[in-house]
Length: 346
Image (tube, rainbow, N blue to C red; front, side, top):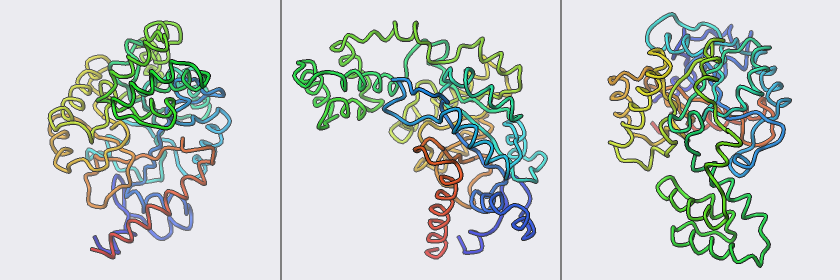
């Protein structure tokens, strides 16, 4: 990579001109940084009161914060949708102006109940990335279960014997922490059966929670959203960290879930968003996936110059209460410094 690569445009749209920077400095900076005129952002839920199954994982935006995020972003980017972005990545019409793609992962019900009324008012058609096993509230994401258990553990008295039992169970799985509430959040996808042991100790009824709380969208609700122009993509079967999977597991998780989502919601639902991140995955994997019918993929790592246009990166604004402007500028500065370092080293 050369220093020139760091400041060049490209990607899903035309190369930038210096006049673009005068008209829209932030949109131009994002185009330079991401190699694309499209700024893709990812959320999970929008809510005033954080439910226990999210409380120990991340901090969702409140409706006020989410509205302010969008108001800021729409000053610098035009709303676009997944079909437009996919078409451009596959060689169709270029996207010529700084554009905003809003996405949501995990298929949380708050998307329909809280986020969509705001998005409708803003004229934004988001993309939802769904886990097949969570649809219709059939199973509970292991991280959501861990957060529920962590909340219950945090409410136990210090002398409660269940704390010691849970701590010992977690220690056997290698999830060691000063407090069992913190330890339960260290349980990985491969160790997720341990959470069922903890749930038994704490008398937590997973099936009852799913039936009563219904944290995930149903197929009927998703069909209604699609009728409004919402796009759908795959997020895997049950949300593993792909860096911990074998090559065979990784490929099945992607291609199998994309095939399942297409079967349920239509042939146009051919994109995949990697849980957590696509950072560190073998470059050859992406060529294989695109050759097997996956349209585009999304990650949350910093983009590398020279990568396939079909491998798109997103930024998440659920990293604390700071407004989107502050988080975006911080990300640009941090990523730009890394690009410059790699350019000078190369």
